Image (cartoon, rainbow, N blue to C red):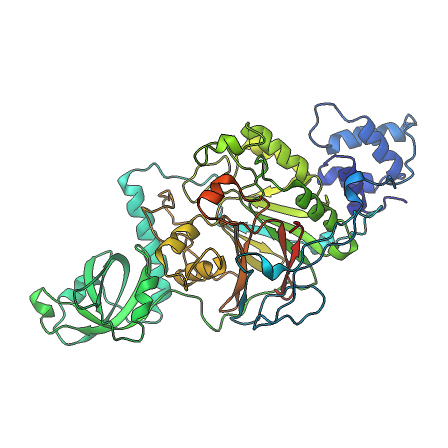
Length: 554
């Protein structure tokens, strides 16, 4: 059939293993005979080319106009059967309502509304009986509205890093964090600087906004929390019989909070303490209303592909990519990848024994080949993770030019970790998620666990910071600005890293940890990680409803 739209041009090029500049696709679509032009462009492509350029297409079309173009006319896409694609259509995971009860009857899992939540059981039983195979159609049914698309990026550290590791850099980043988060809290409390509180008469009421510098329990079972601001520190006592006393278990060092209470009688003697009556986090307002897209369009949220690992699930990935070519997935126009495109090298002890590809550049080249299976008309955005070839300290800049060239398939866009990606009006905070390990280790199981990774994400939303604690498991780079603060509330919070699938809504913000594409490794067995692999959360940008597709086999 004629290749009359850019989407079909891209799909045909992709099926032949080629990527092309957007301008090149536009030129081909506007040719008098797009089929013949495409055949000639592919046939005459330079051997060293990574993708077809607009200059190459212009040269070929000029030959056509001069009467020298004798390329054969294409009869359309090959209708032969691909051996790996003798397939049906994929199952979705089981439907649940806001109480976790199977209700849809059609195999779809939907995110619960309001503050509801849902996630797979630890053994994956939430997902039903697995997935059937899926075949790519003989011709593309995708016909996206390119004019309606928009994707903007904010908070990208790439090219903006100024940190040198000097003492002043650490002072700058903590001062910036405090000032920005304290602004969010001062609208709720009439706070005084700690230096002013120290000189106030005893018995009065006051409030403090400060960074948590110490947390310890007293002999009587109460909690003493020391808060620090730019003028000094002050001790705050939370009595164990207070209704909010359990909230102390959620506190992390270096996060910013506000407290209100009554000063001890001896305050003006220099030995005062604040008896806390109320405690506040920056938090997401309960009245928050997220933005949505103006049309029915979807985004696939994935992470932790780990190409190069012996346990990378190539078959599941190909089933996912094939499904994206089907009519059922025609509205999936965006692919957002939250880090760890490859397995990397030297990330954990004896990793070499579990590698299928031992060269880091070859890992990215192979990832790029797998990315070619995805429809070429999709908008793709990727951020790095801790297995990727960028600095480990967060915020992480995007990949260098050499790796960007390798991963230039479909003109994929690359940003730093974290970044806020605004997709057709929907703000999606992309963060790989290394700090989730720390949150899960520090907080009680009912507040954060690997089986429910979205609950740990709730804590980050409450603290309005993606990695609040310094000096722990999460490596943090000092910069003039703290790129890890959530100045604005995202509509969607997307993470990966922990290889567990979990999702839910916190004060109307959808939190999604998207699992992985890597089966359990020997290292993961040694640390009791049972991954949720081969799942693709599909987000409706116009409603913020979500379904989860399973492409792995049980």
